[in-house]
Image (cartoon, rainbow, N blue to C red):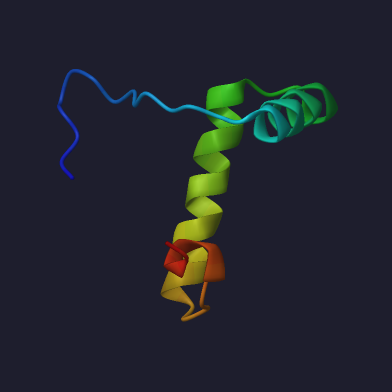
Amino acid sequence: MAIKKGNKRAQSNLNLKQQEGLKYLKTKYRKSESKILAIGLEMLLEQEQAGLLIPKLYKR
């Protein structure tokens, strides 16, 4: 999926557990929600490049 040049934001819906977790991390690390999500994406990409399997991505 390509990202538009002018718009790098993506709409996402989080369930209640994810919202609470994000709020906790935001408070703990004093980072914005978007920064925490960006860090999570970077970590996921690094794991994928290292050849680690991520089971939740394969569940349907």
